Image (tube, rainbow, N blue to C red; front, side, top):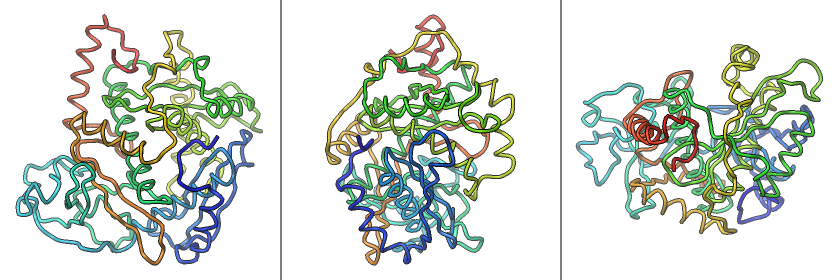
Length: 417
């Protein structure tokens, strides 16, 4: 039970990357599992001189997987913080559609502007995995250098979404593609929930037949913590799940209840997708308990204790509506990274997403494959409480409204029939 597909055993990966820690700036990988009562391994990787986050998280079914996961997340950010090569300043109009991605098709624009194609911005070279052609993407969507004097065009928000590291380049790309698709599904699901006020389609736990997921669920429920899983509503036929864990009814953690935490997961194999959602929820909870993450502030801790978090939007967890059968979710199970990636690219292309762009961030002196993946047309949740917006979100909600109208107003959210 590994919870993912890798081309190398995590102990071998650890032996490969640990000697690189001084060059990357990792001073410590801490096992924080014991701070909680659940027992699913979570680790923190510390980089005091980071140009973005100095604390990265990792999780897994065992300590070897968790510490590699944390270190790899730190390695991803380290590479994205470095000075990018082959940077060109030009407008999209001058470069042309065949040579650059249309910036209007990209998420995280600070402001909508019709003049964007004619504004000179900085571009870096990427590779389109669908058609095999080189294509330029905005530098600011690749860089994670958050220093005050870092170069920026100020047009796009910074995001680590789509960063991936792996034992091989193919593995790194798969990790990144799954993350981009997961965030898109999360964004669409949240937009649908906000628009229609419906309930997620909770997964019937009695139908979950994946051994690893059952083990993870047993660890959580044994700690007297509630666990609920739902299907992430989206228009891509790729398994994507959300998970909420809550000690609102008590739990074995000493002291007052902590709150409710969520996780999300996406993968062609539904078992892996669900296991990622569950372990991410556990990681999110431990992130708050550990208190080391440098992007968590007093308001973040206050928000998880509010009545809205504890009782308001969680009321659907106690709903008695119909539940979904986990076994009916789509799944493309394999044991090969190459098959997983090919499946993801094929399904994206079938849905009209004909560009999946990978920017190679690998540094020869480090030797760990790292990429940034950008999929024009897909969206991701915005920072704060802003409602997701854009043509993709609006079009999805319009189609969903028509589907629900044919379901006699049943707004319970799952895969539309």
